[in-house]
Figure 1 (spheres, helix red, strand yellow):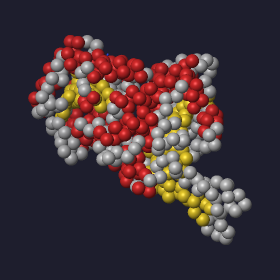
Figure 2: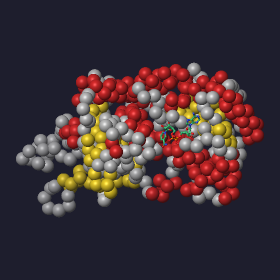
Figure 3: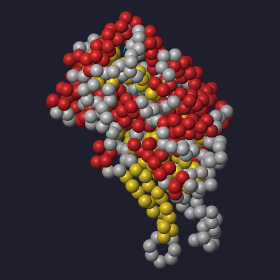
Figure 4: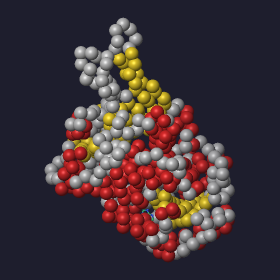
Amino acid sequence: NEEQIALFTIFGGTGDLARRKLYPSLFRLYRKGFLKNKFAVIGTARREWTDDYYREVITTSIDALSPTEEEALAFSSHFYYQAHNVMDSAHYHSLKELADELDEKYQLEGNRLFYLAMAPNFFGTIVDHLKSEQIIDTRGYSRLIIEKPFGSSFESAQQLNEQIRAVFNEEQIFRIDHYLGKEMIQNISAVRFGNYIFESLWNNHYIDNIQVTLAEDLGVEDRGGYYDKSGALKDMIQNHILQVVALLAMEVPNTFSEKTIREEKIKALKAVRIYSEEEALENFVRGQYVSNTFNGKDIISYREETNVAPDSRTETFVAGKLVIDNFRWKGVPFYIRTGKQLTTKAARINVVFKPSPVNIFNPEDVCKTLPQNILTIYIQPTEGFSLTLNGKEVGPGFHLDPVKLDYRNTAEIIENSPEAYEKLVLDALKGDATNFTHWDEVSQSWRIVDVIRQAWDKEEGDIPTYKAGTMGPAEAFDLIKRENDDWVWKP
Ligand code: NAD
């Protein structure tokens, strides 16, 4: 494992994301030897912490990975804390001094990664200052890692992008979509392009429809304030789901490289039809969860959650049908759905193939369709894939029986596989942006969802509801049945 040399500056170093994801990921990289002696981390946030206290926090955050005392001590010694209000110019001056000092102390060759683990409204100010205070004027590389959400509409995303691009060029910007770091998301390409049997069927001649479900079994937890302003459309569809759709729909890249994959994903997203507001209302439905007793637990309504408006019209569920206007996908609906407080937590893709054109096993009615073949890619919580085929039921007569060829990664493999954030941080250290989102993808995704948002915002009255613990409102089932299809996955 090749040693990576860099100084990390984490804005929002006391925050939830930093503690839950970043520090453990850095530790995993350290353990594997990707980070050794030539790395240092500056954590910054408003609170007045000492280095010692910060190192205690680091040690606690990696507790679950059971480091030895020695390991924890050695690792956390690379962490430095600086109290810093990102709005205050003077603070950047001391940040630069500390950065230069650590650069020399750890021989970091001027390589700098800036991780913005803070609310997006600060991104612009931070990058402006990184430039004006010459923090990025080094002989090494400077890279920026930014968390979602990237804007809240096409327009705001564009503004933010312009502000960032005045300082960093596109190759230096790593927009995180942690879904892209997941093993099974990356496996979509392996399944598609490593198996000619699938790629040759991967089109509107043989595929009937494709379904993407990202279901969560929790509510908004303590993020009600953020979520109530965002909603499922912006929180899940604009980024994760559209990225998955792009990977499923894209053409075969010439080689498996950052540039070619990106080009194909962008082309695919550009082929997703941008609806008129009227079409958006026809093809997309939303819902909000209401209280229910499920699995022996009393679940409160979304409107009763902390920091959520009591008359909130924010959607906690979205289902929709996307149409892709190109040769490969004309006529193949992509059904997508996501929501909070659903029956179970799971992410999966179902590729539903067309049935055999004639049912020769049923001479009375050869048009009676046979069960459809389905390729399922399981992303979470189990990882793997399955293929449903029709076989002959053992016994007299001739009855078909769907059988499932099923492969799941073992719990042990999953346990030992790198976390999404770990992979993404390593990619950023190596300068590989394959699993990050390019501006062209972000902007096109906003164009797709903006219309839906606008159409919904013009509607008055309450939005559809669904009982917590179910798979969404009745409207989500009507939507797909209208097309004579059905959700394959019904937990
Ligand atoms: P958080 O509220 O826990 O942390 C925010 C951090 O910003 C804190 O360290 C706080 O001290 C710091 N901060 C706030 N105002 C500041 C100022 N003026 N000057 C300096 N520091 C300031 O938030 P979080 O949950 O860690 O999320 C951070 C970012 O990551 C957000 O953009 C969020 O949308 C995104 N994100 C978070 C998660 C998650 O699981 N928490 C998941 C995906 C994306």
